[in-house]
Length: 240
Image (cartoon, rainbow, N blue to C red; front, top):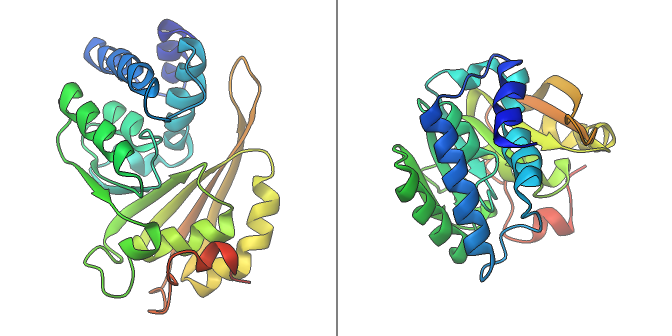
């Protein structure tokens, strides 16, 4: 998917990009590839693959979660090279974005990227996800929407992400093939953490026909204070 195809494919879903926004994506790609030579950010570096499997894929969240077009507070946990939050921020500048990642080298890259692209209302936090929204954190239950993409299975992700979602807000999980199985396995954990399934949407990426599943979990009640558990425990002993 080249930049022109990227723009056209998004337009089919009522996501219209200006020339300035397209230039921001072009700069994003250039900096990603340049930084990736000495910091491990992504295994995908071909331009057409990046536009499809990183940029377009990140923006699919807007296809099913229409509220993303509103001036929401969005937190991206385990954002890595900035996906999905920074493509969403470029396309929808009104978003107030907080990015959490445990590796300082990635945070440094993201800060450089945010500066070069001239993005405002973006906060970068170097932290373990388990500590970011624990019972003592000022970030607990503060965000309208929390996103996560390619971080962990849905049971673990729910424990890491739902504590940061305000009651009435949503957790938007980006999953691939197998997302439905993950959702089935995570139902008990989602309920314990104060969540409730709102929508699960399947789609395929153009050209590659790769399967994707977008899962929207609404926060219907406060998360018990004991969650998330201390670092490492959610992955070692997933909730049931």
